[in-house]
Amino acid sequence: MKIWNSKTIDFGALAARWFLGGLFIYTGLEKGLDPVSFLKLVRQYDMLHVPFLLNSVAAALPWFEVFCGALFLAGIAVRGAALTLTCILIPFTAVVWHRALVLQAARAIPFCAVKFDCGCGTGEVFICSKLLENAGLILLALWLLSGRGRWLALRYSLTGKNECPAGPSPTNWSHSTVEKT
Amino acid sequence: MRNRTSTLAVLLEAALVVAAGVGFAFAANALSPRGLKLGRNYFPGAPVSSNAPARVSTPPARSPSSTNEDSADAQTIARLKEKGLQPLSRARTEELFHDPRYEQGLVVFVDARDEDQYAESHIPGAFELDPFHPEKQLATVLTPCQNADQVVVYCMGGDCEDADSAAILLREAGVSNQRLFVFAGGFTDWTGHRLPVEAGARNSGAAPVERK
Image (cartoon, rainbow over all chains, first blue to last red; front, side):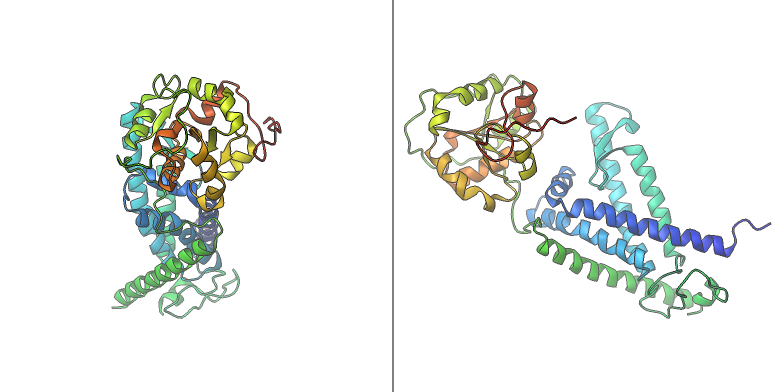
């Protein structure tokens, strides 16, 4: 018996796209509407010492997240947005991990007991749950990068044909037909 | 061949997303009333130079001690000294608050926290100076600070460096470093000892709303 049919997977991909879109818009707005707080958090990582670079990252990153989130929600350039967010999430997760190791050493506590505001837009979090969360987000982004999430997409691809139908009833549509583009 | 074309298409699409996203992000920051000024150094910390502006008013009747920092941790004090700032203990801050010169404007308190925190509660009579948006209040605060014998700047205390930034801002604007002090324990220490506070505007005398 086939448990995961194509329709189920497509609904899952649509949910993943909307979830990522909503999440990035929410966390981006949390930071973008209070850029001074985000600036202080970025500074804690002690990686950018030139004011212009520090300010640029703190000023642009939240709104960039909002932009990518909006692309996911609307279904525009989905794979491009997924690749971009993956490229942001992986180094960001590494940096958060490194910061947690520094805090762990300073506080002499178990790694998973380290709790701090990583500038993720969700306040103080325990590092282990944050790393798991980021791993999940990266996997979802990679899944969308593989070509899923075409349902209800306004313009799935900027560079190819967009066979995506307007609603989730693709009776004569499948991934194989789209991939032929 | 098709895979390679598809990969290139995704890379091209990602490049377009990055370009459009970066443009959108900087435009949003520029249009936002809370947006950051990219060229500004929000965390000034250069040690004070030996040729700091000389004081012009009469010397204080009693110089506050910068030792005996009863409530601030050593790290905070070290940080302040590294920036050429003078840390002030809670006991000395309290003494200055009750000093008759406070009523005469010869002792000035400056609150370096943000607008919302200031409105919620602050040390009675303290001026507001958010170092991240100084254009709003600097002109109002500068003259009283220049005319005062002692200026006490505070934020939340501890790791909070907003008071450092505000003090450096005042120093760069012409307030003598000798008269500038940073209350190292900050507002957390002040309220922790149930010292007087007021809400709303400066000298409003309004009691802060109790948080449930």
